[in-house]
Length: 375
Image (cartoon, rainbow, N blue to C red):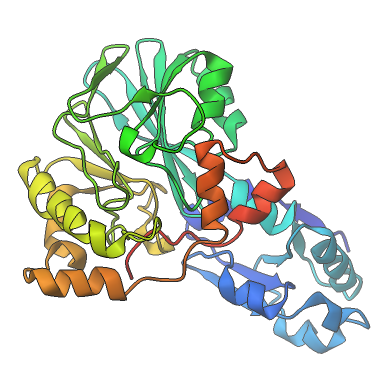
């Protein structure tokens, strides 16, 4: 039997289309429990590959014959070996090309909507990590917001759309993933914007992103006025684009709200977080489509794969926006925090320009789920 190869893009399509997939994950149990490939109709079976070195006969009965079967491991080698063994037993299976490393790094660009001037906005969905980044295109120009370190996909996408990247933004200093914003700006001679309150320790030049800025991309103004929105970090800044879209950074998610503790400031910043969400955001139009910088669970994806919900719906349904008692809110935000992201302090220092880890080290630093939200 032939062993098939499934790419991260193939798996992403299955997630978005809600297809069935049976995943035999041969990583160690602790790695599997920490983070796995998730889809609405995915089933999992975890057994470490070293338990299968003498043969796969004992698990044959647990592998379905009527579903697509994917063998996954950390970097590819172990899954390819186990897939070969299963194939020799007569099963049709695929292995994940590049392993979970490739899954963590895959970005799926999806159009979110049109702008009134004929421009477009795209969401780059990093399904394996939960990160969301954006490209705004208007009249031959492009802006990128909250880029990941996989910079080539943004550059290639801009080239495919025949647009010039003129501005690159980070809504805040990220702690769960390494930003590609500065690198993209250097490669394209674009302006790199960062909130100055998050940039007190950075080692590079940047344009100060502050409330009141209006940056024009082609014909489209990115209006930042009155949307300084601290709470996740002291500099967190939101964007209203074309009076249609609200890029909320890590302040507001579809199913949760941002955590204020990744710089060790939970008690200090919880008041800012409440004011941003309960006062500043309340003054905005409920018709704005919220586009966050992360999603937490796969069910937050819409049918087209985007993560986008109107602000009014979130005020109605998101528990974090409906806690009237201030003390109860403070308790929720400071006592219901998931573990810190993997290597978050090193990631912050990388995003400040203080350290420059090798590429393989950067991959290791980012492995695992995002943990930017209050539970």
